[in-house]
Structures are given as C-alpha cells and as structure tokens.
Image (tube, rainbow, N blue to C red; front, side):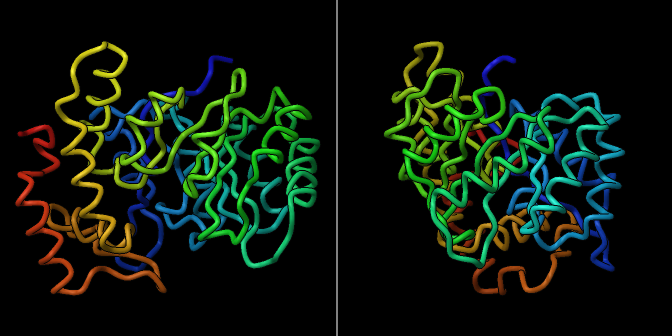
Length: 294
C-alpha cells in the first residue's frame, strides 16, 4: 500500500432539522472538498460529531459512501469508546471495502501505554485487513501517545499501524519511522511539518481552507516560494479563537442554512461570536469561493 499522504479534511457531518444525519449532503460535502484540493477526507472524526451520531446512521452513510467515485480517498473514523462496537463497525466497513481508519483511544477512563497497545491489538486481531491512523488528541481522549508507544505498535503491527494524526503536537517533531505517516492536526503546523518530513495534515478547518492548504502543500514539493502559507495560518488563527465545530458550522451556514443543524451539547456561535468570526475573516479577504485571493 502506498504511504498515506496529503491534505485531509476532518470533514463535517451535515444534519437534518430533526438532527438525523443527512447522508446525501454529508457525502457531497466531503466530495466537494476533494474537488477543491483535498487529497482525501476523514469521515466521522471529532469534527464530524462522530461520538454523537448513532451507529445506525453511520452504517447508512457507509453503504452510500461505498458508491462514491472518491471511495478510496476516505479515512473512516470510528468515534466509539466501546471496543466491541469499534470492531463491529470496522467489520461492516471492511465488508464494503473500506480499510483505512482513524481511531482514537477511548475517552473518559485513565490508562497507560500498555493498555493502549492492548486496545489496538484486540482491534487488529479481530479486523486484520485494516490500515490504522492513530488519533493523538489528549484534550478529547485524556490520553497522550508517547513516541515509545507508537514505535511499539508499529513494530508489532507494521502492516496495520500506518500513521498518526497528531493534534497534541508532542509527536510530529520527533517521529521518523519508515512507511509511517505523520499528520499534524493544524494548518499552523503544515509547512513546518513538511520540512520535518511529515506527510501532510488532517484538520477541521480544511473544510474551508482546502484550496489554500493544497496550494501550500504543492508549492512545497514544487520548490516554489511560499506565498499562501501566511494567509492559511492567519485563517486558522481566526477559527482557533472559537470552538472549531461551532465556528465551522456558523461560517458554512452563511451560505447554506442546513449547517445550522448541530447536535447538543454542541452549539453554533452566538451572535457576537459569529460577527467577530466573520469580521476577522473578511479582514483577511477570505471566502471559500475564492480562498486563495490575496
């Protein structure tokens, strides 16, 4: 399998007014991001409200996503604490010929590296036909991968443990493993990460920065002088002032009201927050229609 690399959006989920998953629009949203420049997407990551969406709706989406022209470009997030449910969901996904997964260790409970290795061992023993991108985000799971844990997992399962999304940022400057992908979780780390040998990014804000992020990525490998990275970073900094999911849904709802639908306990930005977000982005001359404008 070719090493996973490129610009990946942790794609948003689109919901109906009754807060059920709008399968058609969620898939269209993801495919549009690929058309705009993303090499792929991570479906059902934390940005996609995965932990809040019923498994039945996730399975319904997988069945439709299996018909997508971009089927091979999607990472599938599990977003489940239960080991058994994670395994069952992955078995359904692999039956539909999806085998690339983004998996975070369970939230809530406290544990150490040895228990994390046991968690992934049981997954891989049950679903050996998988390629896993580990999801390192201490803020959400309460656990932070160590370099030693990553190395042990790769040594034990070189055919299955293929990379890490590093949203805690304790790994991307330290890991350099053969045939192993490292993806920082922010556009702020894209250029530095590429310079260090990272494989790209997987980020929430690529839902709106796909064109800019791809331009920075392509210019790096073409040896072209960077002229878009500063704007990319400035846009990310604006969103970082807010909850990312709230900010993205509020921003996207300016063009399509369906993005106003969001699952509790998440919420949209309030009026003053939304005004601030839009004013700050306007000052950067940023729109998704022409996000590369100077």
